[in-house]
Amino acid sequence: MDARDQDKARAEKALALFSEIYRQERAIKEEAAGDADLRKELRLKKVLPLLQQIKTWIQEEQFKVLPKSAIGKAMTYFMNQYPKFEVIFEDGRIELDNNQIENAIRPLALSRKNFLFAGSHKAAQDAAMLYSFFGSCKMQGINPQEWLEDTLRRIPDYSIQNLEELLPGCQKE
Image 1 (cartoon, rainbow, N blue to C red):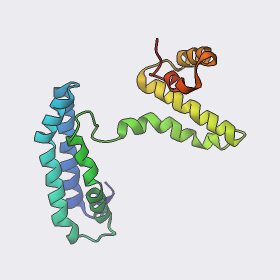
Image 2: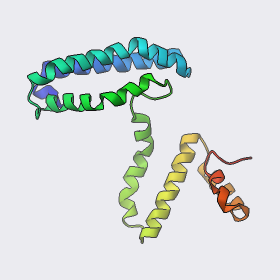
Image 3: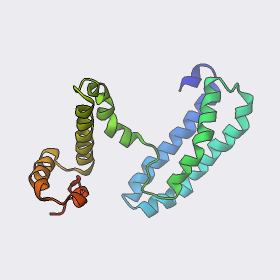
Image 4: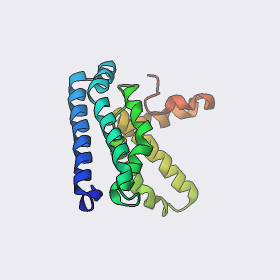
């Protein structure tokens, strides 16, 4: 996006290719409806050629632009990240990007400043641990208050070697 001001043609070509990848990914997600194997198969057929097209185009164009320009930096970033993209073709459960997890942890990231004023280092660690537990509850659809009440009720009689069984989503009924 930042490169459009300096190199509109190249930036718009790259953005169009990425837009098509995301369009295909949305269609694949809908068509596969939770079937990871089908999602993998469809990605190989529909997304891989687009990703290879971008890679080939960048390999041809990257030496025609200044490396420190916005488009040059974007091209270098893509080439450095490309091996990480390839993992989506190994397992259909893997998301194309990390937007979902970034959105999930955003409240935690915003809370970091609050930890500076927790009163002590130990209090900040405790608050961070609780945020982590509650974030895990949220990701697994578990009511955090119910989980905490249940855990606090059970923990006095629990073996210290098996405490991980009390983590959100690991509790045995």
